[in-house]
Length: 246
Image (tube, rainbow, N blue to C red; front, side):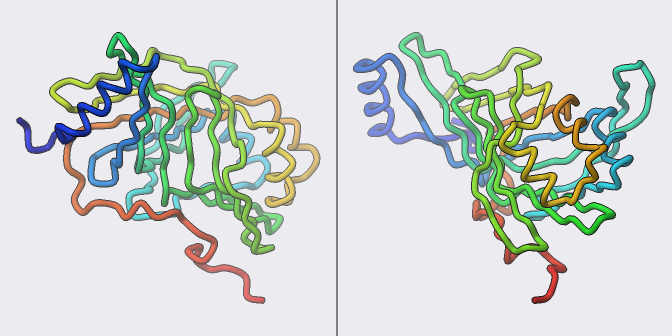
C-alpha cells in the first residue's frame, strides 16, 4: 500500500461498512492537515476592478500556507482582458458522504487558519478567516473580524455559489482524491452590510456587492504528504498583526 495513502483501520472500515448498510449514506470526516490539500480562491476582473475603484485592497493572512499566487489572466463581462488576484488556502478537514452505491460526494471542507485581510482607504480593516465550503447548502462561511473595533463574528454566510464544473471524487485503494469547482460567488444578504460597516465603504460602491460575481474557489485534496503538517488551529483576532492600539 502507498505509504502516502490515507489509511483506515480494519475496525474503522467495518464500522463504515455497517453504517452504509444500515443507512442511505455514511459521513466520514478526514483530517487533511498533513496532506497537500488546498483551495484556490480567484477573483473576477469585474470584482477586482470594483475593489480598486472603492479603494479596497486584499492580501493573504493566516498561516504560512495561505499565500498570494501569481496573478491570473481574466476577462470581464465586457470582454476586456486583464489579470486578477489569486490566493492559496490550505484545507484542514474534509467531510464526505459514501452512498450505498459507494459513490463519494462532498459535504463540506474547512480551511482553519486561512485568512484574507481587506483594508480600505477610508480606514476600514476586516479579516475573513477559517473558511468553510458547504456543498449541500451551496454556501461559503467565514469568521469576520472587524479589526478596528476588535470584534469577531463566527461562521457568517459569506458567498453563495454554483458548481461550474463537475466534482471529481474517489476513494480508491483507501486514498481520497477530490476536486471541486465553485463559481459565481456572490455575497450573501447577511454578509453585505457587515462588510460595508467594517470597511467603511462609500454608498456609491455598495450596489456592486449585490450584483457582481466575485470569483471561484477550486479545491484539490490529495494523499501526498504536507511537511510540516499544519496545526489546524483557527485564525484568531489576536493573530492579526498591526492592530489599532486601545
